[in-house]
Length: 396
Image 1: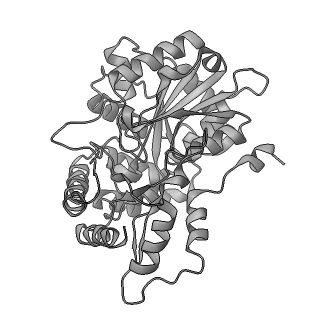
Image 2: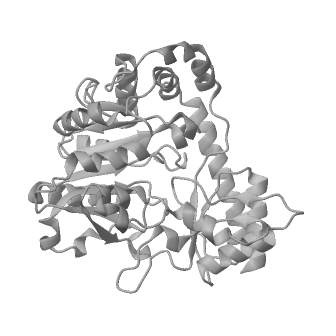
């Protein structure tokens, strides 16, 4: 068997299932699950209508590269969103549709990692979206965990990484806006990382699936494509970005996203995917065209999450230090008590389920960056989020 399987940690939601064993939540309270980042807003009507109208295409095999119309639509969206030159993301050479970013984030490791090379390290933030680690291990790589302290806005502290590590780096995952913190990479962070990538010959894979859920008053987050264009890397050399409709368009079941960037890496990734079998169904492609072409539903979603943030902040702020992120829909809060014990207690007494922070981090030098923290996904209605916040205060 693949030796990487033995190195895998149990997935966070498997740990939650184990944590809940034997616990009976109150029967007189409706369960509120804020442990998973699954939007509860309805998918846009235009997406649902497109799916219904195009189901007949389920009788045809889709192509790995996807329909020209979809790739053109994605190219136009990236151009608008990231202030690019027309055609800068070439729909024929720099864009691939994928079945959600999770699938792409996982499979890209098999494209990049060379098991015969000494460049076997895969950089990832700590705490992190667990797919990064699993992808590295199962592709034969070795994860390298970047420290992401609160003092650095929960961003990777790359300045402290020695050259001996960079020399062995195959590629780096970055997540901006981050999961779980919502922190956003700055121009300075991208500049330093690209300098290192050029010097030590590695790639950067940017997970940007939360990039559209930002505070309208502060404007959209800086994306890696945006940065590359502004700083002269017009072809996005060494860079890939991954975007999804799961969060942006409240359509996690659609399993639709795209990869864009370095044409040479896209070419290799395309070759891998012709064998991988990750072609997007045609009816999903049509629905994706509808979603990427419309911004009105995204504006509604942004307002929904901002209202949730503000309402929960008002409840918790006098008792827990709250930092509302500029993007995403997670609160990453520090508690005065153990996170796992608190989550068990909260579920048993109040029927509210949160994600213990330790489940998202790895213990290094005796410290897990998620210890005494919880991730709260503010995806439910404002009333249910407020109810959950009040329950938290009654427990701590």
